[in-house]
Amino acid sequence: MKKYYLAVTYEVCEHNDIYLDMNEYNIDSTKDLDEQIREFAMVDVAPLVKVYEADTSDFKDFRLYKEYNFKEYECGCDGSEF
Image (cartoon, rainbow, N blue to C red):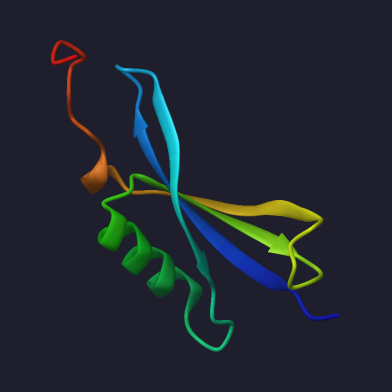
């Protein structure tokens, strides 16, 4: 059975209680998954990217496949700016 994957980038700031989904990206199964995720994170400057897996292309029933954290894109604030 073929699997379908979708990456969602997230903006996260623990100090200001921000946890927002930004963009969704379809994953090309013919390319390296880790490279694609790194590129999505760089484009959105996203510290968190979650990859979801589904059995159908419409993603009506999906589950979390893997999470990627990128320290280089963390906000770095101390919460005093808000």
